Length: 262
Image 1 (cartoon, rainbow, N blue to C red):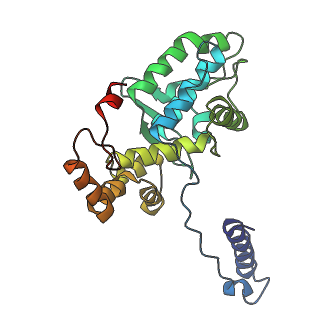
Image 2 (tube, rainbow, N blue to C red):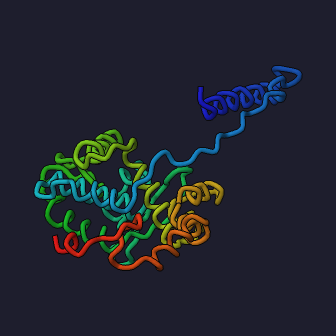
């Protein structure tokens, strides 16, 4: 059993015995001696690079209503970093295109928050609202932002299947995950580009900063820059590159004029 599963079951036992003690069913609480296992500090399973993210988005067929809708869903997931459940619960009036924000109502932990959405995602969203959603809601309109071809809100399992198919079958990227990988990727890519951890915390809706700081261990660009600037082997490689004539190969072998012509 995973550590989270162990903690959940032990917590239930402790609460039950505390309830019995309050009602004087038992004289003392033996569950007080039970200790919860320490949570595992795991990194996000997988993240996309920027190129991989675009590869998934561009692999979708936007010439069909369903294909365009799916492209917009993934664009919004990448731009906002919202969870699958939060996206499925979005209503039409939750998007404020003038302010460029999405209102997430009763997200994880039953908390509301306002999340910025980028111009690119808004442009795709506008196209979906104009050309696709009216077709899907001719007979029925549930009011959800993203709907099925029958006009009802999308199920979470449907979103998972769509995202997983887009990643591994359409884009042919051999990585596990579905909707949540866009959340991980957005946070990591923004940190790589210099975003502040507290801003990422607000966007993702994390209650504790420690949860957001996990992504700082995945964001690798700052470490790569330091590594390239200070590691002895990298410094030596740069020095050789400066000293190397323009017509020399990387291994030091001279390139002939004839080979350059060919």
